[in-house]
Image (cartoon, rainbow, N blue to C red; front, side, top):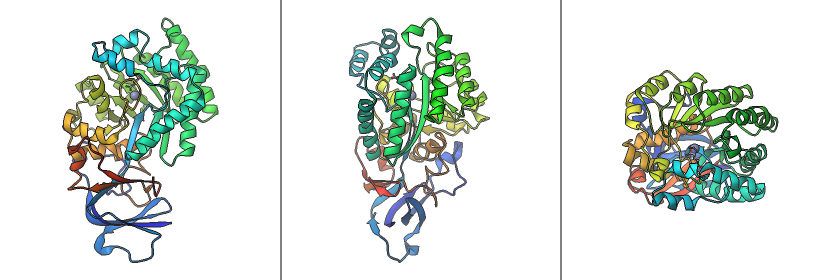
Length: 411
Ligand SMILES: N=CN[C@@H](CCC(=O)O)C(=O)O
Ligand SMILES: [Zn+2]
């Protein structure tokens, strides 16, 4: 099957294959072709260029993208879309004055979702989660990382990871799986942290490895959740099973967690609503991708990641949704990109780079995803007719996507 897209008004994020992430000043540049064509063959980007060089041969399908922008699909490197039920009552409780912390201390929050996951069957969780996956694909996401972390029991965590595996088998979207057993301490382990960490290390991890259920390991490194020392144990144990760390850190407090993550060669550090100068220095000398989650800041009214400061210091930055029932019940990367521009003062170029190539890097797939590059997966967003890509963050509440192509096929 060979498809040709013609008359593309702007073809964005055109890169050579050696560009796996962009940092600092490089993030300001979003390479593009105007009036371009693109050829898809065998689910891959086979060729692209300017219309005056457009191939003149027989194609199985021709798409006329006149007036439209084409860009790589979003790479959402941080989600929790496998869960059951919802937390609408906590949302209303927060409007009425309770904080995220107060709700968690009453047994709500992560433990509330853990109760639902442990009560629900794998099939029910699968059905609820696949609806969310289908929704984000329509919103232009072509690769996604999904975490466990609402099981917090051996069976619950395995159940979530098996759902992620089934989603990966049944949908064309690229899925990376992360084990987040260290998301919160179950009530029965509140006073005995080391017993829960032993359970993660000695019971959960070997079973996960045996069934090959995860690519990465995560922990919620935060005051009141997992300490630096506890997270280090988890990272070391995960690495023994080949799971690279991707860690929740600096959401509410800065406790030198980033330093520990960099020491253990984390692929990414995520949240970063609170960032110190020392954190920035540590990240500068690393391969770790900082990941900002602006819809979480928006939804629970916490600070936005200081993107300007980080980019100006020369760091890369990725953007992701954090889609989860508690702090971010939305997986819309278009909203994330717009919010990064509006609230974090990222330029549209920086935001698109952060949501594509840097997002791909943060889930270890930037050799195959995240840019318009020959040989990469044919994962494309085709917009409706628009003035320029600036319109994407500008019209932040509108759906400007006409078609999404994943692995060469319109979904
Ligand atoms: N902060 C930790 N974990 C999730 C929220 C979990 C929840 O409240 O269910 C997050 O990334 O925001
Ligand atoms: Zn998260």
